[in-house]
Amino acid sequence: MNITLRIWRQHDRDAAGKMVRYSVDGISPDMSFLEMLDVLNEQLTAAGGEPVAFDNDCREGICGMCSLVINGIAHGPEMLTATCQLYMRHFHDGDTIDVEPWRSPAFPILRDLIVDRSAFDRIIQSGGYISAPTGAAPDAAATLVPKEDADKSFDAATCIGCGACVAACPNGSAMLFTGAKAIHLGALPQGQIERNSRALAMVNQHDAEGFGGCTQIGECTAVCPVGIPLDVISRLNGDVLSALRKAKS
Amino acid sequence: MGISDGAGLRSKLRFSVTLHAAMAVSGLIMVLFLLAHMYGNLKIFEGQQAFDGYSAYLREIGEPLLPREGALWIVRVVLLFSVVIHIYAAFTLWLRSRTATAGKGGWRYETRKNRRGVQRSYASFTMRWGGVLIGLFVIYHILNLSADYIAPGGPSPSPYQRMVNDFSIWWVVLSYLIALVALGFHLRHGVWSAFASLGANSSVTRRRVLNQAASLAAVVILVGFLVPPLAIFVGWVR
Image (cartoon, rainbow over all chains, first blue to last red; front, top):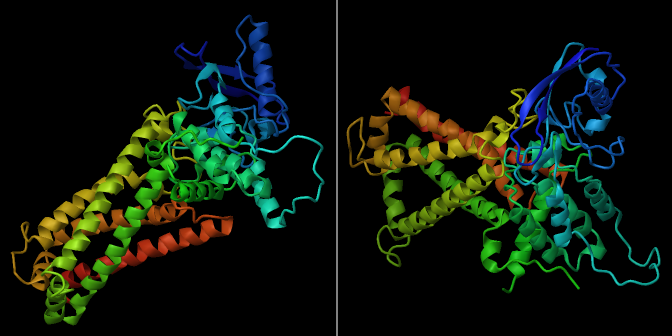
């Protein structure tokens, strides 16, 4: 396969970037999108150029490092897959593919296609944990968890924190991520005690990072590589509103 | 120990989540008003006496406990508050959304491909302009049929006569048609997202049900408001 790529090149955080056109040939349809970029980088390096910087790690869809907007869609045209699980057979010989980083002022571009997603870390730090006493591991059946709650929690806990929801959101909102991180704890008995303060703290940090509000459009859940359901946002909204009703301050 | 939410009441009231809830509640209040308004309009099919009588009755509700038009003024004040809160929340959230996308919304990518997103509906991305259009229409509508100030078909002390006079003119009907279609789209996404913003979307099934309910509300209100003007225009009601 011969592919023409238009890739966002930006030297560093403060530099101006632009789309640069490259052509790569000898691409196998069985290559993943990232392997195709590896081939491009080998060609660029061999020719004495600067390779394209992009984030990646596990390349099997579980780490959440890969982060490309391909032809305007976060993680590319295939549903429920991360960029690393996207294969070149989903494109055609001779295609022109546009590749850009996540775009959000809360995710500053560090270089080319790499963005700084530490805003997500700060949202988790603000409340994405439970307070538990240390010591010996508790008995496995000490806290009984209803199956439905366990399922709901696990659905939310599959979030890999890649940031595609922000990249796809017309409002630049990170509520799908924040909802997933708050709800996977709030759905369990262990997370009940701090459920209200967690919801408030995480939503407060979400807004402080400069993410926009959720208007329930659903683009986030459509591009999410692990299929986080849209209802995590509404359930977080419900927790925030019930926390506000109980707030004494 | 424990999670500190780190936010005072002031900042809690300015959360995007709180503003969306305020927009949802004020919007749903206006939807309730629309249903009552639509019910009143349909009385046009009972004839002039019934319609004008109902209009007079609205001014007498609660008398003598309330002064004349007292109940009507309570409704007007509640609606005015709702409109102000709705617009304030919408404007604040719009500014945040602009800041969070470098002023470009869904068009912040260089590529021209898939600018309409993957699955979003026409209704969902026309909420803001649709809202502006509806706001302008409400001003025009109040000056037209309520205040009788803009009276292209000729003014009249009878509300029934005002409707018949104005909706006999094609461009008046057209202007209401355009506004009502905009309202229908606004409600299609607005009713769904209002419930979701208030925490009602608790599962995948619930998402589908709420969306169907929003479609139903939009269609009922659109059709309910369109029937009287169209019936007048084609001459069924004269």
